[in-house]
Amino acid sequence: MRDLDIAEVARHSGVPASALRHYEEKGLIVSVGRRGLRRLFDAGVLERLALIALGRSAGLSLDEIARMFAPNGPPKIDRQLLAAKADELDLRIRKLTSMRDGLRHAAACPAPSHLECPKFRRLLGIAATAGGRRRTGSARKRRPPHRRPARRP
Amino acid sequence: MRDLDIAEVARHSGVPASALRHYEEKGLIVSVGRRGLRRLFDAGVLERLALIALGRSAGLSLDEIARMFAPNGPPKIDRQLLAAKADELDLRIRKLTSMRDGLRHAAACPAPSHLECPKFRRLLGIAATAGGRRRTGSARKRRPPHRRPARRP
DNA sequence: TCTTGACCTCAAGTGGACTTGAAGTGGCAC
DNA sequence: GTGCCACTTCAAGTCCACTTGAGGTCAAGA
Image (cartoon, rainbow over all chains, first blue to last red; front, side):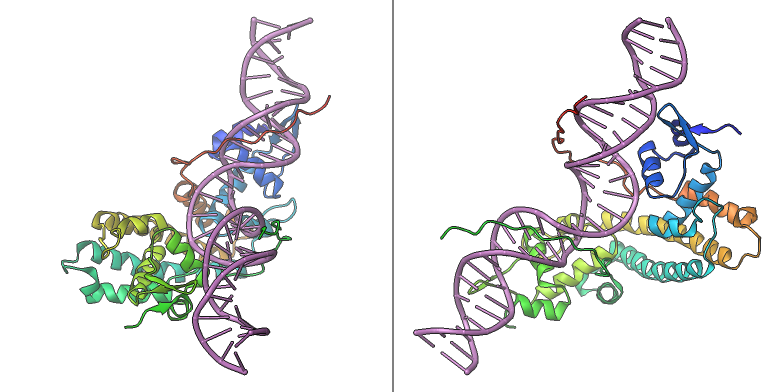
């Protein structure tokens, strides 16, 4: 199979060229050369992109996906990570399912005010406990703060 | 019930004060006065915050949630929006479910390379079609671009 | 009266995954 | 030979829901 230039890869995969460059920068894909300035990719990149799409829709970050790929070789998938992600997904699915059911009910509930409907109130409870801060405040890199000139009195 | 100051609301609701200020700025909650500088909230704000949490975990943006609240009155919930969000959730649940199953399989699959496993390859197909760009490129506000000085030859 | 410290405001930072703009470059058709 | 134009690079913009920092204020306790 002939190598594909970035436009061809974009066309075949549906991934915009800017995203492809971004993936390359992050080490998720590798170009095999150039034609002029233009990147050339091995046809195998399409499979790799499918794999990336898979990871993304499973909720993996690009960094996590990158960790699954050996530097240049074939994907070396970490089974433990996979299983853990599956469990995570399972939890998310269950939360979303109660949300969906609650929402459906709320959309159809005849109670004059939702706050008077016991089902709705239960939903509120679910949201409060199961709902989530997504940002878990974990290990965030900090940058030096900005300064503002002192206010004149 | 006595009015609550922001710290009390934060304590009772689990929502950080900075977020409460943010919500007030966005019009999601309203403070009923001040004690000194300190915001005071009606106790009803707690119910409202539960409602907000509900909306958030259902995938609504703060703006969407704001639209559900009458300027000052009780929540006026848009049943159509709710139903639509429920459908959206349903779709997401289904995607996540195939992902989860695929992931589980991949974690256990004995094939030497995942790419050789038919199940895994099917999963790749799902990811490619069902997977998603979340950013749908819809009506994004643009700001004037930046300029860079011309590069010297 | 003075100190304390939790609040206040405003502006800017943060993460993640890209996208966009401006200016430069080079293969290819003519 | 030359013009086109799709590519290139780099930096900065975008979205969203907050958080953070600096410096200011004031109610309450000592």
